[in-house]
Amino acid sequence: MRRWFLACAVVMIAGPRPPAVTAQTATSPFEACAPVGRPWAYDDLLCVYQAGARERRLAEARDRLRAHGAGDAGHPWATLVLGHATLNDDEAGAIGHYQTAADGFVQSREAEGEVIARQNLRFLLRRRGELAAASRQVELAVASAAASKQPLTIARASVIEAAHLVETGGDIGRAQRSLARAER
Image 1 (cartoon, rainbow, N blue to C red):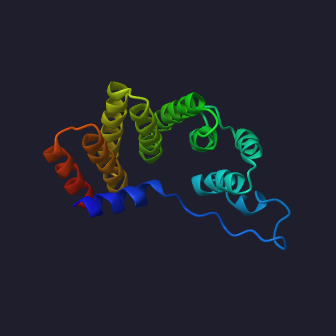
Image 2 (tube, helix red, strand yellow):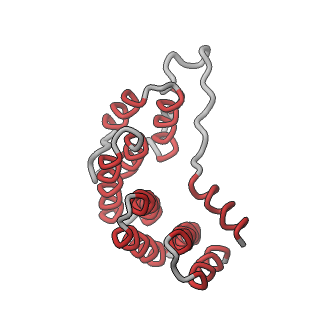
Image 3 (cartoon, rainbow, N blue to C red):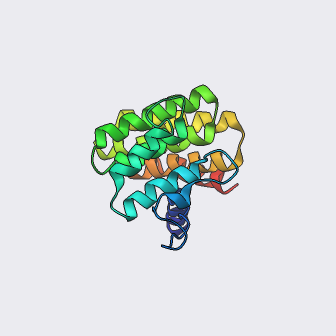
């Protein structure tokens, strides 16, 4: 069970890889991220963050994300990625971005995004020792996922719940039931 849990955690946390950029195809590492003929999506915004991290140009990546509305609840996907891009330099700022993103996802009724934002909030709050606040993020993620009836979103929230229970010394039986729910 532990190997299965770890494999799920890695799959749930890992994001898509940005497309390879060569000098022949782009003059900037960010150009390969721009969608062609469609609006910006989470994967495209995540590509901006990953390109900035890879090239040690996170400040530029954050500026580019802000140009797409990051930092505002009306643009929750961009704000979520801004949280990722801010984390290493400003943990408190990242928490604020993740909360703003979660609020935006609640407003737009996008359970998948809300669960991802709350997953990041839970991780950071638990790491800071704020267990009650971290537990609240888990509760909100599980409730949002259940209401959405989206199988992958429910699975993600179930894995988050199980991880939280294991990491905080919670009910192992409940953690196992959460993983069984995720597996279904």
